[in-house]
Length: 495
Length: 105
Image (cartoon, rainbow over all chains, first blue to last red; front, side, top):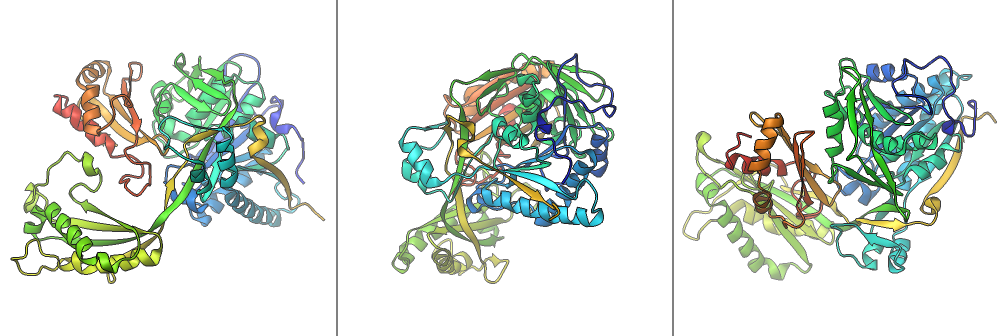
C-alpha cells in the first residue's frame, strides 16, 4: 500500500522544496492542478506531461468524456475511444502519479460516465497496477487505493422524482412526462465539487468518477483547500479542455495554480503560450452564456474577471465570482433508444437527374409509399439526405442547386436514404424494398429506365440502434451525495 | 470553423450541450469589431437560422472583440432529424449574413 494520508488530498500544500517559483499572488492556500490533456484517449504529449510534472502539481486531473460526440455513448453505456488508447494514456498518468505521490483523478470515465464505464476504468486500472507492480514490486505504485464515484440514475426512480416535483426542466428542454424518464436506457447525474471532494477525502491514490461536470474534477481540490471559489471554478473552466485555452492546443497539457485571490494559467508544452485573449476566449467555448457557468450548488460569474499577462506564457486571472444557489441541484442526462436504422447510399452522376434531384427524390419517395404500403406492416420513417446539395443544413441551406459540369456547378449528388423502424430487421427489409427505386427510378415515365451507382453490394448498411438525448433537467438534492455512490478499492495490497 | 480573411479572424459554431448551439464571431481588431457588430443584425441572423428571435441570445463582447450568438438547436443533437452532430456548420450561415451585409468576413 502506498503511504496513506486519509485527508491528504484536502490539506494545504506543505511539501517542501519541489515547487517552482510561485505562479500565484500573495499568501494563503495554493493548489496546482495539472491537466495533461483535454480528454483521456485523445493523446497525451509525453514532453508536455513531463514538463507539467516538474512543476510539482498537487493533483493530476483529466476529463474522460462529454455529450459532445452524441447520444449513442450514453444510450449504450459505452466508450468512444479504443480500450488500447485509454489504457496506454492511463498507464502514463498512473506512472506519473506514482512518481509524484499525488492523486490522479478522472471524471466522466468512459465518455458517458455510466456505472459500467467506472467499472471498466477500474478494471483497466487494476491491469496497469499489476503491470507496475511487476516492474517494481516495492515501488509506490505497487499498491493503490482507488475510489470510485458512480453517477448512474435509475430511470424508474427519476420518473418517481419527477412526479414528486424534485426534477425541473432547464431552458430549451423537451416537454416530458414521467414515462419519458422511465424510457431512458441510461441516465446519469453530473457530480459537482462536493462529490469529488468526498472521493478525495477517502485518501485514494486514484479516483475514477462517473459523470461529472468537466470543471468539478479540477475545482474540487482548490475549493476544498480554501482557494478563491470564483477563481477555482473559472480556472477549472479554462483548464477543462487542456491546452485549448492557449495558442497551440496540440501539446495539450496545462497547469493551473489556484490561490486565495484567483488563478494562474501556464501551458506546459514547449513553445505554447497562454495570453489574456486565449484564456478569456475559452469561456465562450461550448458555453451558451460567455459570462455565466452553472454548476451544482451555484453559478460562476466572470463578468468582472481581469486577465493579466505575467509573461509571454502565463496569464493571471482575478475577479471571478461564485454565486451560491439556495437549492442544491445536479444536472441530469439521459438517452433513450428511438428505433433502429438502415442506410442506403446511391450516387447520381447524370446531369439531367442532378439538375432535378429534389423532384426525383420527391417522386421516388411518393411512389415508394404508394406502391409499397401494403408490403410494410410496421411504422417507419424514411428520410433523405442529398449529399452535395443540402445534406448538412437541410432547410437552412442558402445555396441553390447549380447543376452542371466543370467548376460551374454540381455534377453529382449522393442520395442517402435513412430508414428508421422499431427493429433492425424491419428497417433492413424496408431498405431492401427501397433498393430498386434507388437503382432504377425514372424521373418521368417517358424516359429510359436509368441505373444509378451503388458503391457496395448489398447497398443497405445496418446502423444499429438510434439513440436520442432525452433529459435537460436538474435534480434537487438535500444531500449532495444522495444520488451518488462512493466506494474504495485496494489494488495490489499484499495478502 | 470558418476561417476569416478580412474583418473576422474566425467564425466557429459548436454545441453548448445537446440542446443548444453557440456561434462565436472573432473579429480582427477593435475597429473590425465595431463594423461587424453594426453589420450583423440580430433579426437577419435569426431569419437565416430560422430561429425564434426571442430565443436567440446575442452577446457583444468588446474586450474580446467577439460577437456571440446562442440558440436552441433546431433538432436535438443526434436525434433522427439532426444533420450535424457537433453543430459546426451553423458558422457558415453567419458568415454569409456578414458577407451579404458588406463585410468581407
